[in-house]
Length: 173
Image 1 (cartoon, helix red, strand yellow):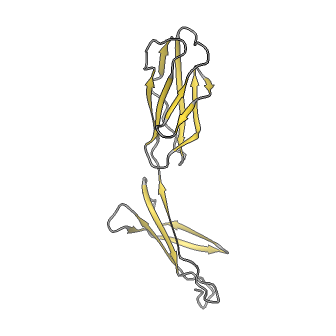
Image 2 (cartoon, rainbow, N blue to C red):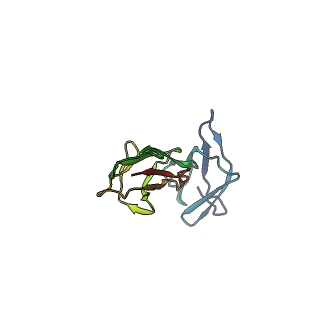
Image 3 (cartoon, rainbow, N blue to C red):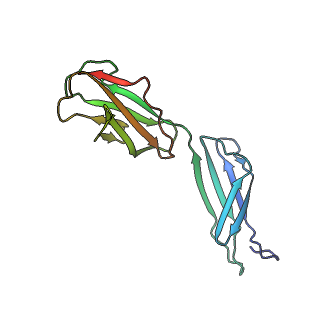
């Protein structure tokens, strides 16, 4: 609805889920042409889901807009990397199956396009299994005798980066 001063009247509610009943989040909203911007009056809590509803919007002729609702989540948890094979310090043959698992500790999911696996500082073309989070690589040729170091970089869909593997993931051929 439009009031006598030409301002658009509306109902805009943000609720924090995980609480019974859900808590309403206060904030300030404003229209700029067809764009509505809302700023919460406090930091939104990490790792929590929020539901937004907008209703009561109408044009100057009184035609009501469709009520809108959507949800969003704030994910601040980093993905976790678990070494599977070879274990740190293991001796193995020249073309070992090298694999680890990556899981998102939050809820946005792993962004497979960000996975970078390196052997001795050289990026390798790895496989990734979405179903189980396995990142794997089998060298096409024998690795040289001696110690080798594996690193994996990965982010989730919220942009949170996993911590580097520590202590270093090394094995011997």
